[in-house]
Length: 371
View 1 (cartoon, rainbow, N blue to C red):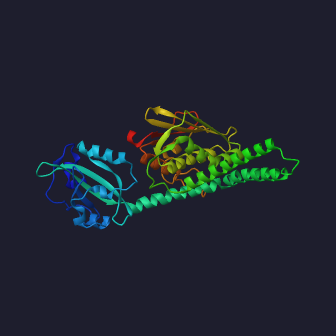
View 2 (cartoon, rainbow, N blue to C red):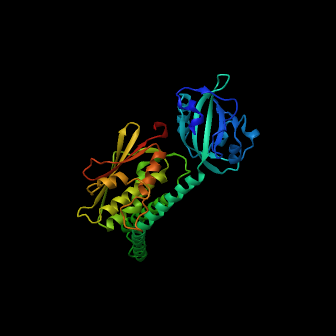
View 3 (tube, helix red, strand yellow):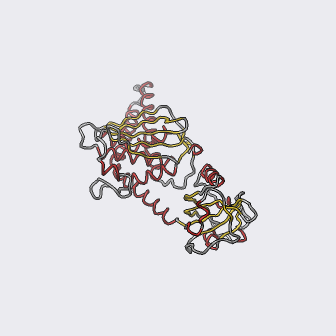
């Protein structure tokens, strides 16, 4: 799309034509022009159709009327700083239509100068809503596959504490006779029931968090300990029944500005992959550690007792639909979706090829302002 706009490849603003360019652009292109205060100066017919606003409603209005809660404030702050520096910004933006519906745009914004020498911005966009919806559906498919793999362990995880609650309640009922009431024993049983119901509630909370889509959630502060606890609640019984030791070492608690449901999905995917990979090993363990890699970034490391990935697998493991599992046993989407989630958080996911064991390293900014 840049061939008809050679000036946008330069680092400084260029003179802007008096009318919106159209020659050479795809009919699906959405073209707008915005001034330095974010006021819409010109809008193509395609933009009016997609947003649901008339041209009269758009022209002279702030582009903030299109904003939604999908992106954190720092997203737009980074965009603004990029174009104000004279650089091109490219990325994906979610807008809200007049009807209230959301739509996604692959966007390129280029700084230019008007004929009067005023700084303005040319935006060329292409709708990618269907693609984003498909990505969301694939993510949900991967979630359901992971839940299916964990179903037996989750059922056992809930049935075991329920049996404890029933047993304690039955014993308390038997001891309620006038001559057999032991207050100390009653207190201990009640404490056990309370702790056990808390455990069940944690499992259910983890399931609710994990099973829902967090694609459109706002970025909110969340405790890393809470995220880890809800994630472990879904898989620790599966690990225990299979004789896999699950260890966790967190260097303090951290508040993380994120979409907690998505971070839980990433962690559970890595844990599930480790679980599957070490089933036949004599030594079976998975370790999760977390620490600050610097004052503004968190590092979460998932290591298992495997000996690492062989070269061809290591090179392809994060590609969509790549899997080493037997047909029907994996979607091949887990790592690629996890990578996309972390990129949306301005984070990274990397395989540590120098580690003695199989190790994946997650890095995340503590706040989106740190990205």
